[in-house]
Length: 158
Image (cartoon, rainbow, N blue to C red; front, side, top):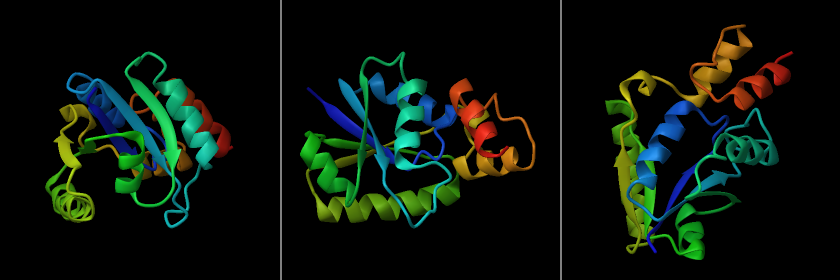
C-alpha cells in the first residue's frame, strides 16, 4: 500500500488544500492529512479545532485519514509508514521555499520522496493567511473554504 502524508497547519483548510489532496488520492492508496502542532505561527484555531475542521471537510474522501503530529514531519512520516510527502505549489515564491524544505527533509530521511501538486488556477492565490485576513475584515470566503470552515471562521471573528 502506497501511503503519503500531506503535512501543514491547515489554519484553516481551504479548497486549494482539498484540490491538492484530491489529486494525491488518485496516485496514492492512502493519504494522511497531517495537521501540525505549531505554536510559532500562532494559529487562529486550536490543534483540536483544526483537526475537526479537516475531518468534517474531508468526510467524502475515503482514502484520506486526518492525524495530528508534533515534531519533525519526516519522523511522523516514518511512524505512519509513508513513502511520500505531498506539497502544494502556488507560485514561484512557494517553489523556492518548498524546494529548500524538500531538500532538508530528503537529507533527514532519504526514504521519503516529496511530490508536488499544483492546485487548479482558481485556487492558486489562496492561502490560509489570506482567508483569515479576509474574514477578519468582514469579507466573504465561502467560495474558498468548505461551509464548516466558513462558519467556524465567522464564529471566531464575531
